[in-house]
Image (cartoon, rainbow, N blue to C red; front, side):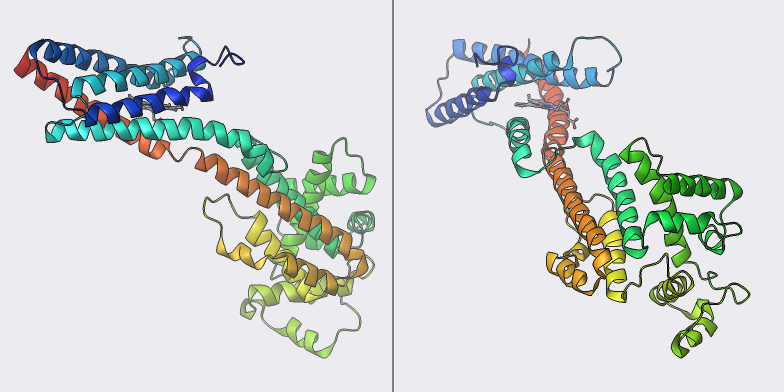
Length: 392
Ligand code: HEM
């Protein structure tokens, strides 16, 4: 403990105190009890001392509800929480001689054990977890930054997917910026004026590449990416009075004649995609359905998913093999964007792992908290009853 003088009882080695107390409890439980008046008085005093010490962790927790008040730092309170809990465990051991004489005292002891063991497993387990965490994940974000990072990865994924679908940002943005651009009309279809202007500002920025930071670049590009995503899902994207793509094959002509309401979401996206590719061959990369489908799965099954403790079954479909197979169908110019997208999938999986580990590191509180509150209620009843029937 000498190397961490400030930690004191919060040092990992203090787990030995609990190990010692457990060993002592077993010993007392095994040896026949002493029963004379002096011991009974001592046991009773230990009962009150134990109850007094046991109240300290609750005071700490109640103090947490008033964080804005300057009532000492949190670490100091946690030290009292642990120290008083160990002391309480010791006094209860003497008080009860390691046995539960009545159903109520037995329940009290079981609850105390649950609280102590869950506290110890949780507290020291969490320390161990945070010690090994850097070895388990490449980049640690910390609990608070996980959700913002998840959203940032989602925006990056949208950008990478767009990079698979378009030839390059500059020519795409130039086309959108043309006077009376039909591409802009498709991208901004249905947008309120303010959002349309926002989109145009983003397109200007993408064209001039005037980003100050990587975040700014992703923000501008993802705005364009989202409008492309919306256009691809838009049943009204094909307007018979709009520009007509040249050289349409018969099957596609038939598809265009169909009422969009009768198309499935996949058919609609396929139709719109082929339409945009035919209308803007210099801006859109001809993309095979298998590549498009891979990108859609990546977006929906990986990036759009919120964090979950249990791994989602659907994400099983996104295997490394599938990625490698997909690159086989991709145009050579799409491979770099696909590689970046796959790298992002791996980073998102690391983020999921970090989320799960943080959550796992708090699972013990599900036992510790409820058992501690039940213990408080029964303990108060036990104290009241023993004063009522037994004196002091
Ligand atoms: C007499 C025994 C104990 C009692 C009555 C007690 C009571 C409590 C209660 C009521 C909570 C709040 C739970 C929640 O927020 O859901 C809590 C949290 C906690 N307990 Fe205990 N506890 C005891 C022993 C221990 C022990 C032995 C340890 C560790 C070795 C421990 C470590 C903690 C920690 C780290 C927290 C979380 C504190 C925070 O989030 O600020 N407790 N305890």
